[in-house]
Length: 112
Image (cartoon, rainbow, N blue to C red):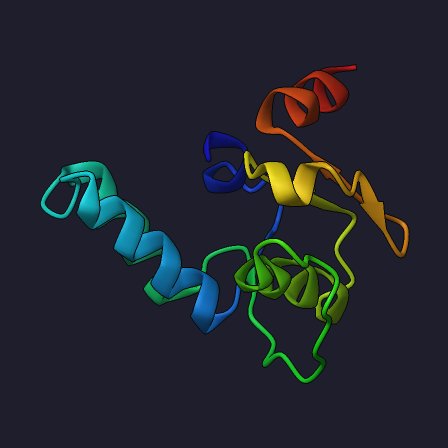
């Protein structure tokens, strides 16, 4: 998140992805945290964010079809990476030259 906030990487997001993130954060009790308010403010201002409407449908992740939205967003925005801790996505490793990495793998790659 710091790399994004410092504008060293650009974030690709869709409405569906944002809804999922906010739902997860509020389920874990972060709804009123200052960090969440800062994050929401950055999203509202679209700071360093690619936000294109998703116009394609991809049915690649069979075990959790809801995860396909991350691939659709990455393809739509011509992303280089999907950074995720989700095992369904990580097991793919790559899709259409978009590397799928865990946060740790991405940080190791970014630092090198």
